[in-house]
Length: 286
Ligand code: KIV
Image (cartoon, rainbow, N blue to C red; front, top):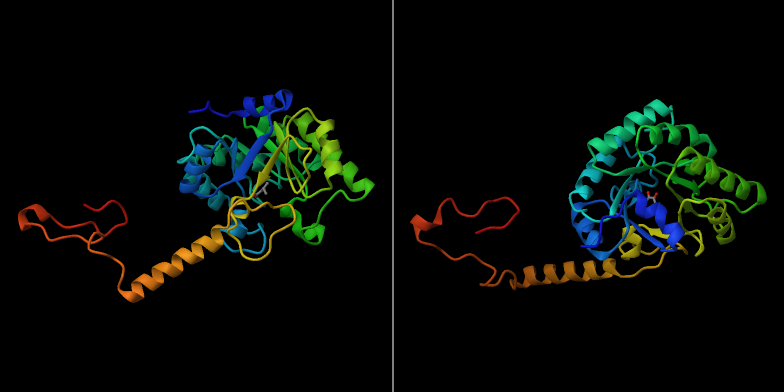
């Protein structure tokens, strides 16, 4: 096994020029695959509200739901660095509130770091968490938890003032002790400027090629959603199409009586050896 990825690995990546690969993850099965694939960072993103729960945005996702998914993912992760998103409402009220929420994410969710959205306005909160030993990943630019304030999921930093706010936000996060920053939804030249302006790694999504790393939502990368693919997504698979085809074949086989075969069925055993029979629960049956 490759050695464990930690905050030190992440911090060192910028100096060594090794680009970081981060992918979102929401369950133990995909976590195991991600861990074995060499991905550096598994992010339990609050995007789970949209891709797992079917919500129009991430705002309704609760701290308990995040912790549930973090705990599941943590069971599949051995090598990758594990980060959990702080959901909307779990950290904005006060640094103390943020500390309580982040503590639960680490204790109950098993994550190694938390991510929160916002720049200058979040610096005090970041400092509070970092002071007590909780690593924090920042997130600036298109911050989905501010969807209503932005008037939709809109690219940020298109004018000089907005670009300047992003740069200052990233610098404030670094000064507060954040160990890395997600740059989401901004022109490539703005992300490049932020990446030059801070000494911690930047991880981009819809932010062009000049970040220190890249992150994609797992379901987007695998081609699981339907028709709409945002411009910044590269689909490395078409699992949506393949899943639909596989399910269709299953339906055909069931209707035609072609599943299960004799090999896929249990045979009678002598009553004394049969015991109580196979467990009705999902799992390996004997
Ligand atoms: O919630 C999420 O998945 C994220 C990534 C897109 C960075 O924040």
